[in-house]
Length: 289
Image (cartoon, rainbow, N blue to C red; front, side, top):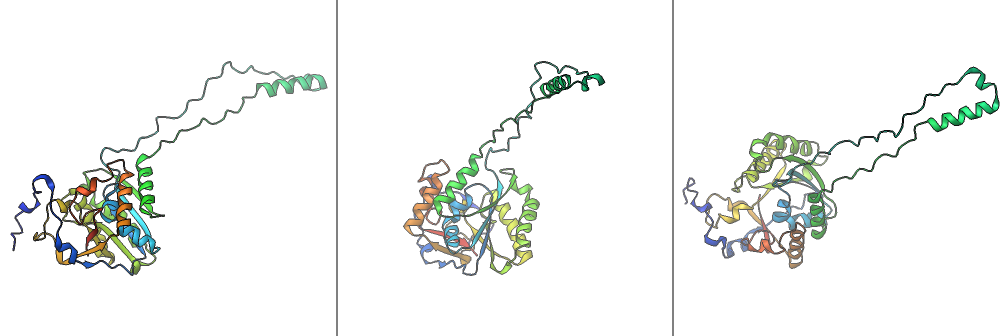
């Protein structure tokens, strides 16, 4: 048995290439027949589509509702505040002071003249300046990706936490996830999908630990995906609990949809083909239960 303290298995092979593992072909299938609502904990945009797009599509096809807790907005993305309020234009000339004497109101002609002067002196109502709302390209890309995947409705909850800084915000993730899970109408039909807490990426591991904490507290089923682990783990890696691994076989149609969803983010459509078998969008998705 490998030494648990030996992390040499986390060093990727030269060139990052690795042949497919035949061991994955015999994994037991993932079954979530009782899942009627899926809550996904996504550290970064695209994570959930990359690792579990096929599962999202299958559950959505079964009319399960999907919530995505988006922890960060991705590298280098920040919320841009409005540049400022529109300043009203100065009047071209000040309004003249109007003096109305008591005798002016006795003569109808003079009264009409005064009323006309008052109407002309009133400040005209200006139309509110048009506000250009900035387009959130990240959300637009995600919407296009879900459409390509065939997932019609997704409720997204954005936290806006710092990218590469989730390890210092685990309490915020626990609180946000608890608000969703703790008030679920049907806790028995609820499943949480999150990264594995031993994945090898700091943000993924922080998200995974937070999900484990919440699911243990509320006794909700937790399903974990692998991402960075595919770059360092192997069939003999003792760090990965392979006995808990399950697979979801993907048809060629679903694989094509995942490629199309990946392309919605502006990257090369086939970039994920470089990842080892078992990663999105390979012939299967692998989860730990």
